[in-house]
Amino acid sequence: MVRDIAEMSRSSYAEALRAGLAAQRWHAVGSESLADELTRLVNGWPAGAVVERRLDIVTVREWTIP
Image 1 (cartoon, rainbow, N blue to C red):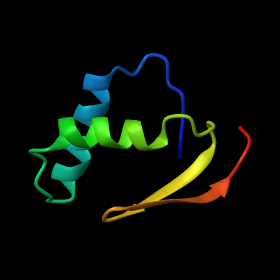
Image 2: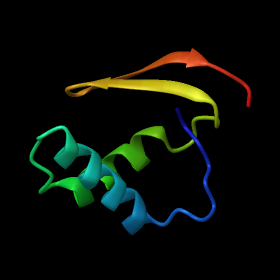
Image 3: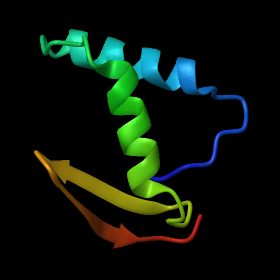
Image 4: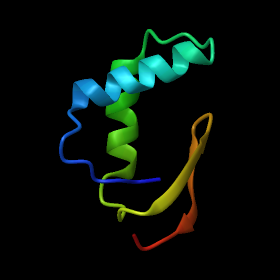
């Protein structure tokens, strides 16, 4: 879900991605670039949009209003 969290910095977002990937036993080496890519992809979408990513395809599954 797209959310606007004022207290979350880019580095804390990248760390959350890294931890999530590591917990799922995925390689977490590219978490910094993944954070940048995901942020760029959803930039401009409204908070509350439910987004899913499958490989290189990102789609909005549901539009919600928070």
